[in-house]
Image (tube, rainbow, N blue to C red; front, side, top):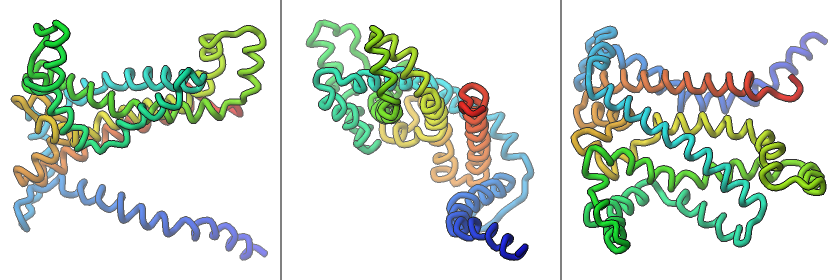
Length: 294
């Protein structure tokens, strides 16, 4: 009898084992490999153990801090994406006139690949691009400038492109949660005379809090480790290294300068920061947005 119970306890782990093995191969092994490489100076097949020297050199590198600060600047996109996602999700939930068309228009940018989006906006935002031509046509010629070609505006131009492309995902994520809200509560509030703002504040937003919390941390992680394609296609880190971000710097160290030890050290730093953000999300989920049963 005891043996049967033990066998039953093993059954779930047997079903999980193929997925766990795959996760270990695809994710765990590369993480361990990068962690080990971060303590070595690697030149071809030659590996020299250097301890924490790679991390020390990295922390003394101005370009590392420039990349980290730029990643922090991109966090500006997070509240913008969340606010726009909530606003558009609420409007679509209330089925404003033409809501089907607006839903499609919001999703179209998200469907485009980042490479295609970057190339298109590189053409639009250059000094003789469409955006500057439109500014001149409407009498705002004094605002014309090379948006991606100067250090003061390049990062913010990329931010605008990211917001344009990614806001559709957040909108659909929050809208999916709103559509699962008990319709009887909303109808009862409407019968009591509650308007759209009251319903949103009292019913919809509280119900969407866990999704908004998840989307918040997802955006934060994306602003740390998902900017390479935008930077590589639109500016390649320029002008004057003003748009360097951490994942692009990892690429430069590992591929362009063939410094795998330094690239691995930077990847470990980025991984640690990302894990910290995941921890923040878990803490927010537990303490700020606890389950009703708690």
